[in-house]
Length: 191
Image (cartoon, rainbow, N blue to C red; front, side, top):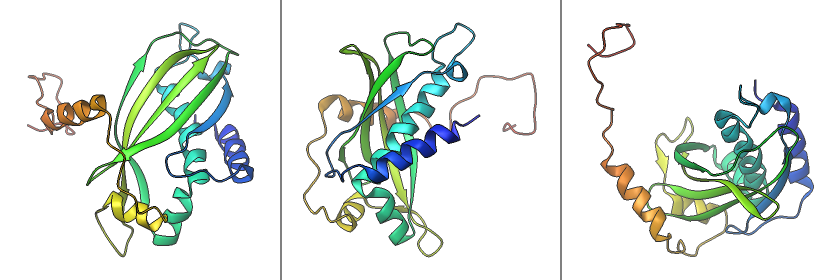
């Protein structure tokens, strides 16, 4: 179940916090609850992505992203991500999360998020988001147009080499995926 009460608390806090520049980091703290755990009594990997929502959406509020989206009738959708898990996170542990925009290209805005405790990085996520048009304008909105709508006309900072390598590797990935022979048939899979 989505942690709606925690989400609403983070949104309320973000609305009271000072505005951030387009490339400034948003820092938030979270305490891991029993509902965040997997059968091994550590933070569930799926819930990790949900907790990243609890950092990314308030960041979007503080950067003016949500305001710009609403004003233009646009949407904001995750178009890919990769997470590197390094340390176990346990019940009731307090973590600090850092979320930031690191740049954009002609299709996507790239962000990174990380979770920390006692000066050590616990996990790190790279993601790309697409800005999509609403009913009046279908398809993806160019990130430069989106940034200009936010009042930021500078070009993207250079994307780090590791981000460029991820973009290249993902472009080589087949879509749709090639399925192995499947004996358990379902109507949802191609013949």
